[in-house]
Amino acid sequence: MFVDKAKIYVKGGDGGDGLVAFRREKYVPEGGPAGGDGGKGGDIIFRVDEGLRTLMDFRYQRHFKAQRGEKGRNKSQHGAGAENMVVRIPPGTVLYDDDTGELIADMTRHGQQIVVARGGRGGRGNIRFATPNNPAPELAENGEEGQERYIVMELKVMADVGLVGFPSVGKSTLLSVVSAAKPKIGAYHFTTITPNLGVVDVGDGRSFVMADLPGLIEGASEGVGLGHEFLRHVERTRIIIHVIDMAGSEGRDPFEDWVKINEELKQYNAGLADRPQVVAANKMDMPEAQEHLESFRRQLGDIRPDIEIMPISSLTRQGVQELLYRAADLLDSIPAVAEVQPEGDAAERKVYKLDASEDDHFTITRDNEAFVVHSPRIERMLKRLQMNSHDAILKLARTLRHMGVDEELRKRGAVEGTIVRIADFEFEFVESSSYY
Image 1 (cartoon, one colour):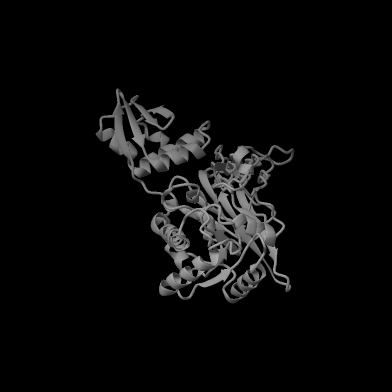
Image 2 (spheres, rainbow, N blue to C red):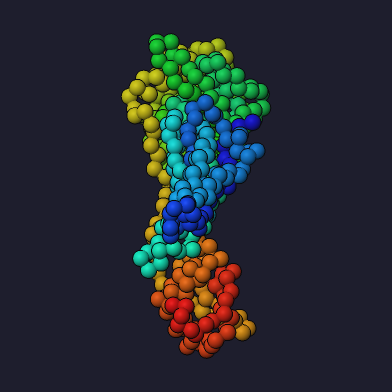
């Protein structure tokens, strides 16, 4: 099964907790603090592997969590950092942040990698908090939480040449005769429901990758038929071979087919209108094909004289080799990677973010008899501090005083014994200055 879109959850590893410990060796009086720092949590890294072709693996595994760092140790030993988690993805994968729509990365080269979720920092042990005024602190930090997010993955096949056209015009048959690919071929619409790739050996030492893209129909750019799901794959191709049923075997006019398909490509992404294109006038072995070809040349020449028309027959292989030579010549004359500027919603995906800053902003609300303090800075501090020691409580009290929280509580009517709540931490308001 070909899977070209997936949504997954990733989370970097949490940092290890710092340790409160002291030196207790014999003959070392007043040894002092010896609690080490926690190790860093593992990152989640996406790495391109050219051996992969679909996002099938992400259909069954949608959650990726890196390991957390080790806790700090005594004797001033730091905990080991966790190993990074490397996730292999196919070339051509585009990564978006599901919450913001931000483009994270466009992964195209083998070995290219990016960190999509960073691991948290390890907490500091009590050796980091020793000062002349407090040479033996009983204070340490918890590890920082790893980054977590939902990521949307879209795969756009990496091919040099893309075959486009209405259903049943012979795209799959053409791919099958010029490469070792074995796409499904049938006398009904939408035989091809997934892109097929094949390596084409031109015969003169040159080769390229050709993709047979599912048949497009009028309205594909708006979600009609299967084209809405696979138009994204056309963006990666360096040149387009537009296969036309020149015999009109299904009662359609060949020139109207060309106009409709090109309009759908333009509606999806205006940049595709400038992509080098060759018209493969297929089924030339059938009656009336030659007459239709002459009319098609006149009509196309009036609006796009730059587009070359090459008569072929995938069934008898008439003109197929000439088409391959022409495609190879075009590939030699254009850049190795086709760049298409995003249109519409895709162009608006740029997201600007402000760097997080430690401000002293806070708000105070009432909950029955209790006061509730809301402050991102203090809430982050409570997550990091190990609040089971007297030193940690003193540090919190000093922070509340310096930020002006205790003064504001007094103005709101807080007295000795009033309950104050910050996140999940609850304590009694104390007037005594000994805590500061």
